[in-house]
Amino acid sequence: MKYGFVKIGGKPGSTGFLNQTRIIVLSFLVVILVGAALLMLPFSSVNGINFIDALFIATSATCVTGLSTVDLAGTFTSFGHVVVLLLIQIGGLGFMTLASATFVMLGRRFSLRERLNMRDYLSENDMSVLGRLALNIVRLSFLIEGVGAVLLTVAFSFDFSFGRALWYGVFHSVSAFCNAGLDIVPYKESFEPYISDPFVLIVLSLLIIIGGLGFIVVGDIVSTRRFKKLRMDSKIVLIVSGALLLFGTAIYMICEYNNEATIGGLSFGDKLANAFFLSASTRTAGFASFPLGELSPVSRSVTIMLMFIGASPGSTGGGIKTTTLFVLLVWIAAHVRQKRSTVIGMRKVGNNVRSKAATIFVLAIVTLTVTQTLLLAFDGGNFTYEQLLFEAVSAYATVGLSMGITGLLSLGSKIIIILVMFMGRVGTYTLLMAATRRKKTQERIQYQEFNIMM
Image: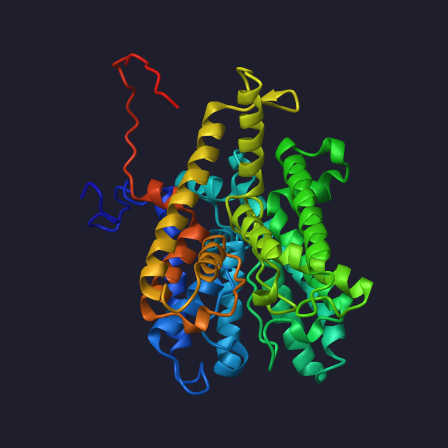
């Protein structure tokens, strides 16, 4: 068979159908479906759960989004919580990364095709280090999550027994580092009970930030330890991430300083901690320490913008990515100044990079436009345009923040959000590549160029 999976006789057949992008898409899809099936088991939930809600939670966990149609703490049993945690971990690190690290530990050698798949997924061109890179990513992630779990366990031990505090520490450390935003804090929405606990908020913020920087960038920082010696893309990620983090913190401090419904009644230190926490969480983590529906109009607009930008490539976060934003801004600046080349740090940005950045941006806008239209068709009479837009951007950027309407959405809107969460994690660009057969043929016909009025 030309496009079959296997050949009769047990020998590998043509793998033309399973290219790199399709393997990535299918790996996420399989994990989601298995997770949904596990969550529907009788001993996974307290009083049972329907298929759509199980699929929604499995998608949200695997795509490290954080939106939830049910209360995780009260709906699922300990087994269900473990399933959600495993889905978050697999979704955050990636099934291919975990599988590759396991193969390395078992001493298995990778085929050329497996190396090509890993190269695309890890965004690393040097195929000789891919196995070791995957193993280092898993080791570093577990180390960071472990430190976070210890710190959070200490904090939770003041409110819960040691066993429960330890479990909460592990769960929320993984959820924060993977930028998932799912929580099992009982009785309250997200981390509202800890609005006056700067220690918990700062620990969660640091886990979110580190997870959102990207594994390659974090590894680069650990190995070089000097900004000047970092790779160019690592420098870009750190500069843009830092600028967005400070910008968000400043906006929330200014706009919410006297808002009694959010942080207005807190001390200055607590206000700063909550503003910093929300600024970090908005970059695809999904935790909140107060009701987001009470934010001022300016803060809500800034939140939507920060969610849309998201984290950095190769990270556990979503959005269009910080590097995409940077390339677009530098490209526009060069074009406005009528420069022929787009230069960053004495290096020219290639046409492929600029085209990919523009494509990612346009696809995100188109996807959100279609999503918003469909959500308005299903629930336009129940919620405002802004509430549905907030939900759409949160789902696409795999953030998980909500203005409190997720559980109230209609069946049609829930299905739309499930699809958008999947598209946001895998990437619309990746999905289109997976659905398209690429023919490696050179065009022999030269076409005449023409200008279009703009």
